[in-house]
Amino acid sequence: MKWKNISFFLQLTMLLACVNAEGQSVENDTLFYQLLRQAMIENQIIDRGVSDERVIKAMNDVPRHLFVKESLRDLAYADGPLPIGYNQTISQPYIVAYMTEILQPDTHHIVLEVGTGSGYQAAILSKLVNHVYSIEIIPELGKEAANRLDKLGYDNVTVKIGDGYNGWEEHSPFDRIIVTAAPEQIPKKLVDQLKSGGLMVLPVGKTSFGQDMRVVKKDKTGQVTTQETIPVRFVPMIHEHNE
Ligand code: SAH
Image 1 (cartoon, helix red, strand yellow):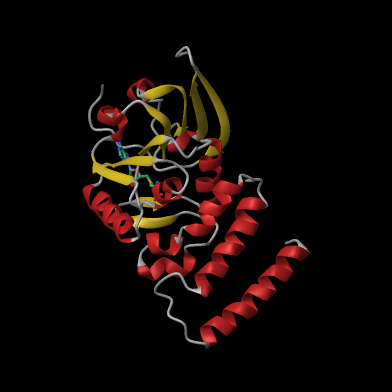
Image 2: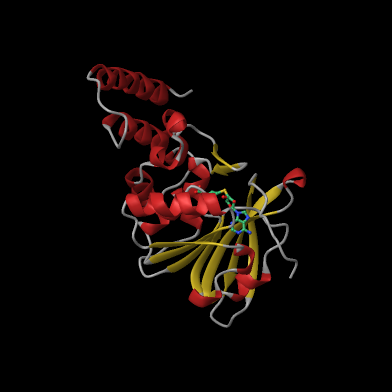
C-alpha cells in the first residue's frame, strides 16, 4: 500500500473513532459514511483512472449505504459487489464509476438502464442526465428500488418491472443505454432502440467463459460499431423469451 494511502487510512480511522465516540446516528448520511465515501472515491475510483469530474461528484453525492440492507451498510464502500437478495448484487463502486464514465452522459440525455437492482446505478445517472428509464425483471427488487429512489428524491428515474432484453420501445430512441446484467450476445432490440449518435455500454458473455465490457456506437448515419474494453464479471441477464 502506498504511503499516501496508509496516511489517509490513519487519518480516516482517527476521524471515524471521533465520529463514533460522539455517538452519531448511522441511519442516514452522517460524517461516518461521508468519510468512507471519500476514501472509496480516492482509493478505488480516482487512483484507478476515473477522471470525469461530474462522475466523481455524482459518486460523492449518492449515499451508497442507503442502497444495501441495513446489516451491510458498513460494507457499502468496500471494494467489491454486495448481495441485494434474489441472487443479485449491487456492482462494485469502481465498475459503476467506470461504466458511467465511458457512457459519456450529458445533461440532456434520455437513458435506458437494464437491470435496476438496488437502484444505485440509476441514482448515479439521475445526477448526470435528463431522465433515466430503468427496467428490472425481479418484481420484488424493482418495487424496492422504485420506493427507495422515490424516498431519496431521485425524481427523474422511472422504474418498470419487465424483461429489459426487449428494451422499452415506448420511450425509445435513447441517447444512452446501460446494461448491468450480462447477456450472451448483444440484444438486437437494444441496438434498434439506440438513437443515431448514441452509445450503449454493456457486459457480454457467459460468466463461466468470461465476459468483457463492450461499447456499442451508432453513428449519425445509423452504422453500428462495437469495441471491447475490460474483462468483467456480472450476473447473467435473465431472458424469458427467445426472440
Ligand atoms: N444496476 C444495479 C446492479 C444490478 S445487478 C445496481 O446498481 O444495483 C443486475 C440486475 O439485473 C439484477 O437485479 C437482475 O435481476 C437484473 N436483470 C437480469 N436480467 C434482466 C432482464 N432481462 N431485464 C431486466 N433486469 C434484469
